[in-house]
Image 1 (cartoon, rainbow, N blue to C red):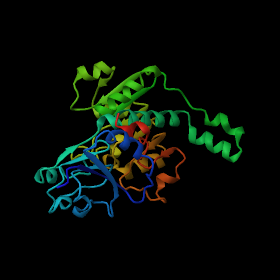
Image 2: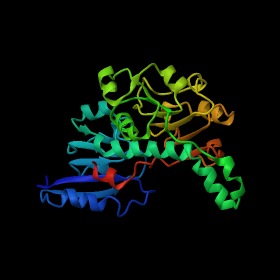
Image 3: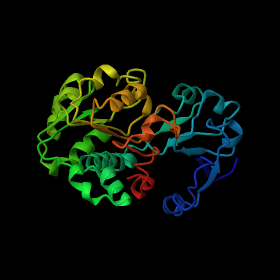
Length: 304
């Protein structure tokens, strides 16, 4: 075995990430002569044993590690997800293969929270409508695209953990009316320290002017945001999801938006990624879409 600890950074061959990660990787690993890194592109969505056989550690964005990924491999010691959540990693398979698994909550906390606020503000100010007016020369219609401020509004969150807490901290200067959260794992003391009221999920959807999804994807949360909850929202309210697509029943959300049941949405994640270009969501003027990359910033690459 090589005396060097070799780290492989898995990338999607369809993504042009050249120049984005290298400066940070050089900054981290440059002073460590016993460590070397290599960037490799995976062939398919699931990492294969031959792709990781020469590495002691692997860093991944969203590539899937399944039980088959570890077949015959006895070198890999650790997988580090450049992000949060374990839904793309077979945790049981890692345990069986004696591979440590780590995530980088500090790396995504502020970038994702900032992304949520970006969606809130762009929706509240009706930025897509204003942009379209300029591009089509219809300045005469700008009064019809008047937005509103966040002052006095109620912001609700499904989840008040790592990212949800940071979101509420960033919202402090906006002079909100109320901050609500549903999180069965948070304590009232934790919420109170943020100025957040812990309530049931129905109250979040009934009373919020903006709702953000800030919970992990797991057996408890998959599909939990459905037509029943969406029907409770105010027709003036906005829905934002930067967490995971399958937490939301996308068909129900699409129907609610098409019917004008809610005012609009900001979506960075989807049930199927990439989102088909002919999907109804892609044709709605009151929906802002991003390719699961709202948090891709210099802060995220640095991990702090």
